[in-house]
Image 1: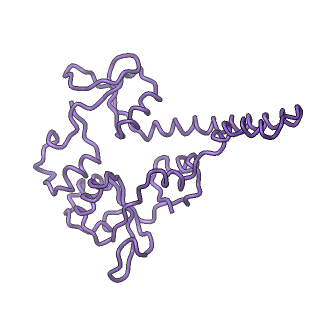
Image 2: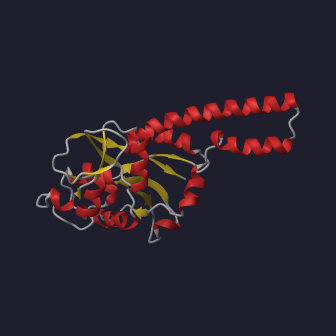
Image 3: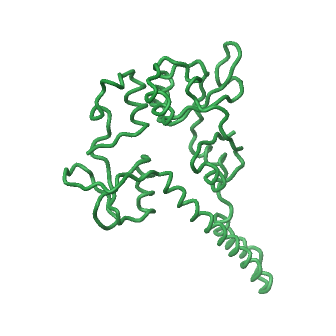
Length: 246
């Protein structure tokens, strides 16, 4: 058993200039992917996907929280899980935790006032609760990863963009509009975004030549947020669509 995703098509077909009409799926698929039984918990599946850095997970028959290699030809596939749906569930849990944490912090402050708890003791207790009500901002998350967004000119050929995405292990690039010969990072306004999904839905599905300008198949005028937005709010806005962080 194997699995093929938009990321596989971008990295293994488009970036190498292979012919979509003659390339076999077996040549570019991920063979024997990890799987989870249908009885596994959502948190187990999400942690497995985050640990191994993949976005799709086959669901098979079986029980318990156990990940299996799908090399067994007798495995019965029940479905395919997308990390987007899991993140939506995680978002609901995060919002509930934040609401509960805020109520708890308010209660602690009330008790402290009534029982005259010293400020230093309250601070020690509050530091642990603060993480519940103050999720990190996007700027803090980006700073911790140390990776910048990939920025390209709109006239860059699709195949070259796909190669950049493969080498940087990225699933999206930002397209800027420039005048003259300046590099993308020197200036220019954001014009659009190009993702691995665009590679499949707009390039391969429409038999677009790989040397076409990326600007011709990009998503223009995407939503964006500022780096000061916290993770929970960003996940809420991102559910079902892409945003750019400025």
